[in-house]
Length: 150
Image (tube, rainbow, N blue to C red; front, side, top):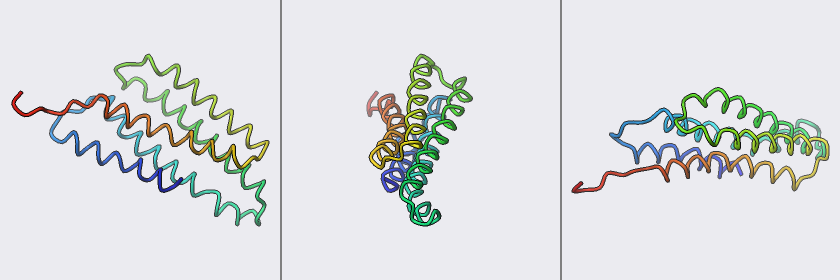
């Protein structure tokens, strides 16, 4: 999971290579920043269970619960980030649905902090990874490369 997340964060460099010399909108800068930030947070969340397991004396249930709580905390941080940065986005029609989705994911991870199910922890990590991947897809979709001869 951590390797995938780091790869997603590296997509930010790929995006900047695509956009060399072109002007950036506030939305594009915000997306790029969030791809990198969310990718790195996902990387650390993916790495967290191993040291956490040893820190709690090998208690697997407690490790799962604490890792799920960390993901819920990260989802809450992302909600605050969305609400703080939305003024930089030209199109805000998707902010409401995104806030709803991220809120549901935070609730899902809080529930797993109670249940302590390993499969639900893995789903929570994959759902988190989907955020920077989605932003990267939006950047690529909106990308208008210069065409020779035009």
